[in-house]
Image 1 (spheres, one colour):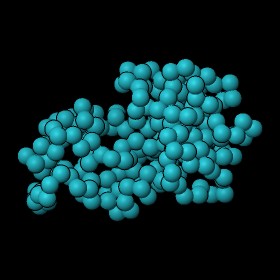
Image 2 (cartoon, rainbow, N blue to C red):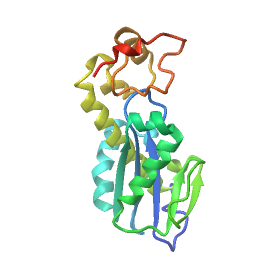
Image 3 (spheres, helix red, strand yellow):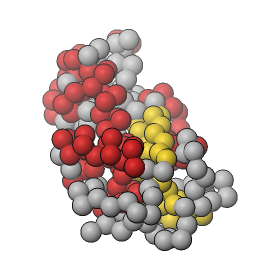
Amino acid sequence: MLKLKINPLLLECGTDEAGRGCLAGPVTAAAVILPDNFKNKILTDSKQLSEKKRGLLKPLIEEQAICFGVSHIMMEEIDEINILNASILGMHQSIDLLTSRPEFIAIDGNRFKSYKDIAHECVIKGDGKYLHIAAASVLAKTYRDAYMERIHEEFPMYNWKQNKGYPTKEHREAIRKYGVTKYHRKSFKLLAEEYDLNLMNIRT
């Protein structure tokens, strides 16, 4: 059973990201403040949930949360500042969107940069330990998946609707065959082996 939050007496937000390891698309972060009476037996780390369960939890979280924020950091910025900094920036921006200022921030993982003057704590595998981080993981995942499904319509040959931009064999074979798009992260190793992608032939 997941705990509600780290500090029972503080207005505390949980934050998490999705898509750090992807070759294409944004990294998406979410921040969530849940009410003290929030309970849910299904909610956990989004990676442990089926797509159907994530879809059911998303509107429930949005309806029952005190407030939430979701932010996409796009490919160009990921390439410019690196994926770790982009992930942290996304978390900061999602906290910016909260309509209530948190008194404490709980972060999934082990890396974060201080947000304003608010105390924080990093929790390894926090999305499987605290409900507000789990809620943030579900929102980050569902919003990012929706984005990837939209751009799939533009470039269906990469099958982002299925692989969501992760480095699957199918995705890498499509990169090898069709080259890279404006949605690919150019700073990432897009193919497992050294390979000339012919970046002059970028699809737009």
